[in-house]
Length: 256
Image (cartoon, rainbow, N blue to C red; front, side):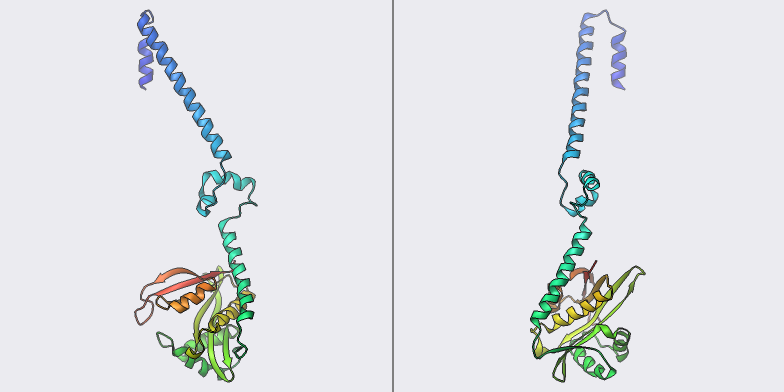
């Protein structure tokens, strides 16, 4: 608005030589500024189009400069979710390989077959639980998903057990859940727990599971190390989750 007023004032006094020179100088400055602004805009536009796409996941999905490259050549820059899916699938393939290498010759892994195995499972798991479960809790999981319950046997003795379930979560995805895992203290550090988890995961994948979750005490470092070595990631902290007042960590593993 101020420029309009200045131009109006100069147009009423064209006979004054000094004011005429000032007018010419002002017009020249305005022309230079406009030219500089146009050049800068052209330079910025060229930079945005020719700039290399960011490799950061957030920039790939939300960045302006990457939107052009994703629409022209999306095959060279897969979205972050696809990369994560491939990573977890590769981890699962590695788990199957490690499972065959780490099996002890004197340990046999069997599926749940009858109620006669229930006392051994309960006796083993109750040794390490931070809160007691009734027999109905065990029956809820094992009777509904018997194919997701595995035992590690040393002769006639049950030295390890895992209890899981698999159902629809929020009417969208098929989620597996590891409810209980225990290994006899005399048989630990022989990868029995890892092998039980691998067998449960393999059974869930064969039944088209999308993911598997579990909770464990935040102070249970051996359990955290076991699951994280198998590809689980920390998803959420649950404060005072257990009856003993200890916080829990929810861990999750994605299959797709």
